Amino acid sequence: MTVFLVLAAVLTLAVLAVLLRPLWRDARGVSLGIGVVVLASTALLYRIVGTPPALDAANLKAPDTLGDAIAQLEAELQRHPEQAEGWRLLGQALQRENQPAKARDAYAKAAKLAPDDAAIATEAAQARALADDKRLFDAEAVALLQRALKSEPDNQRARWFLGIAQRQAGDNAAAAATWEPLLAQVDAATAASLRKEIDHARTAAGMEPLPETAPVVANANALQVRVALDPDFAARVRLRGDASVFVIARAPDGPPMPVAAEKRSVSELPFTAVLDDGDSPMPTRKLSQLREVELVARLSTSGDAMKRDGDIESRPVRVSLPAKAPVELVIGAE
Image (cartoon, rainbow, N blue to C red):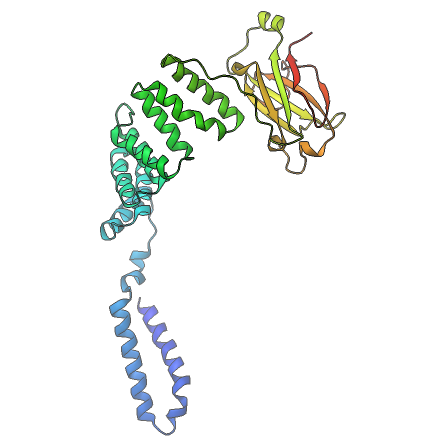
């Protein structure tokens, strides 16, 4: 801090020397008086409205551990408790330090300070569940999630957590209804898993599973691909439950690198996949750039996209784009 003050005084004197030079010859006393007054006024003003402790090297030391950072943040929030983002950050840090009860309380303060912030309300609700021995969303957590969805209806996390809370409470019909709008917001693979959860909830509520719907085609060159197992092959082969199915589109007679690919679980068979530019692994090589593609479905026990020994593929099918009808691929057919 001493170095700072000396440098500040030198700079101030240098500026004053330039500004008061015209008075020096004829009114040296006046010049000296002005200089002294300016220096004194500057020092006094900084003392009153400045932050001298901030210049202390001890106060500039970065925290060595997350625990030190938490202690510093807690001290800051004690001085300035009106910071919603500060309480949110504290809640996140406390969760990482495995202090769920304290994290819940920090998030509660953040949610109170920012009642219209859907993300904070959702995180506060999740923190309440994590602090519960049975991981249950209580009434206050449900109210937070409902508040989040009121201010942000498309908040996926809030909707998912609210459905879980409703399932925990035994209101399966409400959970299914809460989750259904998510089907239009998530990708195909997530939607397939979500449909299963919705159908479980509907069945528990005494309702029929959701009706099958045609997949949405994203653009003119998108491909609908129906993938199934050959019945004879399925009868004589026992498949692992964690096996994967890759639906691949590649350039005919070209490199093996796909221009579009989608990964599904073997448990989803039979299914219909939609391949489009969003499924391209290469940003410079898109499905819509081709006029013809070769399609294949591969059963992989390793879960690796690269073909391995023992993988089973369907017969490749060439398709001209745009395709008017879904393409049928059968894995294991002779």
